[in-house]
Amino acid sequence: MSDTTALYRKRVRTNRLALMLSTFAMLTGMGFLAWILVVLLYKGFGALSLTLFTQATPAPSSDGGLYNAILGSTMMVGVATFIATPIGILAGVYLSEFGRKGWLAPTTRFINDILLSAPSIVIGVFIYAVYVAQVQHFSGWAGSMALALIAIPVVVRTTENMLNLEIGRASCRERV
Image (cartoon, rainbow, N blue to C red; front, top):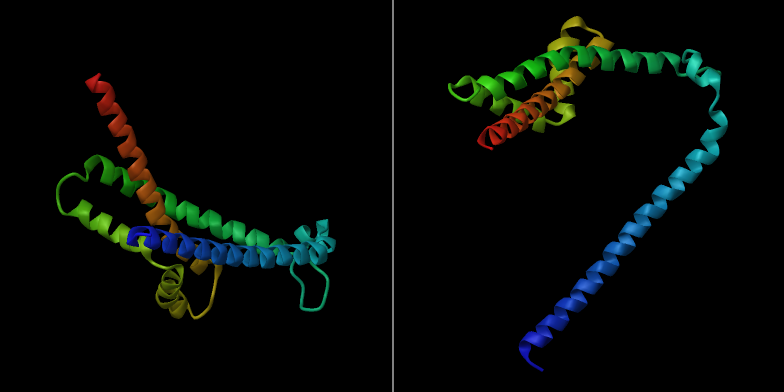
């Protein structure tokens, strides 16, 4: 038996062992997730009712619903979308259509990339320092600002990429 054959067999054994351990880890994780889902459905399905979605959140240890939490979340997402969409689309259009020369476009792309890679906790701490610490109380406005700050770079990148795709298609059609 040559050295290459022995090395090949060793690699095959190592690969099979790694695959078995990976499969075991995956099945263990999936088992725990399935267990959590079964317990959640078993204990939580009985709590679903119309009052859960139509009544306000009560004091602890009393019956009630999640209406104000659902409404508040919807309002925060709406305000964040209202803030982030126009800013993101305008910046994306600028970068795609006019951002070929000059210093502003590369700077904007650089800042956008930094915001895209920033963890949400960092953005939350920033909004806390800039807004919440100044007004001395928490509010939905702070949540909306943080969510908008998370959404703006996504909208900028998506808008720029989609417009660049269309520009690429148009230039291909002109060549034909």
